[in-house]
Image (cartoon, rainbow, N blue to C red; front, side, top):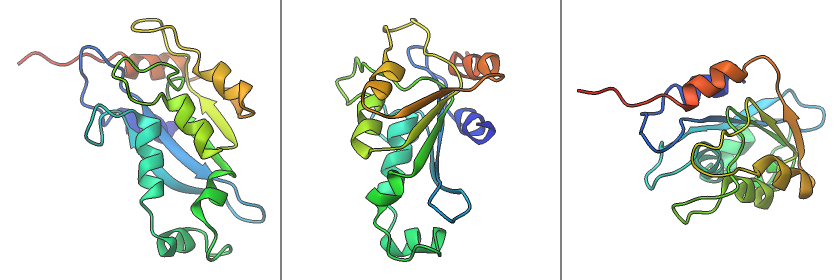
Length: 163
């Protein structure tokens, strides 16, 4: 989760959105855990969220890059890798997007990730988030990480500096 916090710190704060970090860690059988992608809010063009960015970056990996990351599983398709992937995210994945983009909870469910470890629940600043429940209902294991809530929330709510 500390790596996800470091990703969130890369966000350029904006007034009407949270700053979130995400790390995708695959845990294939008989293999050490491996980070396959990271992401943070607004990293990619289009008002993007951290979880969606990390998944986009993972999906942009070539089969050769995936094999290099996971040498004990040469040629494994990325979709199979994702089914063994844990998502570390500093803020509960969104269940509603006011921008019209697909909510992060839906993106993670579609990717068939195994587990989602969450630093802190999304506060009701903008919408009523039900991302963790959506994930659970779809069979994704949800773990609320204890101990970094204050840090994750403080990063999420950073505001732009005046110039």
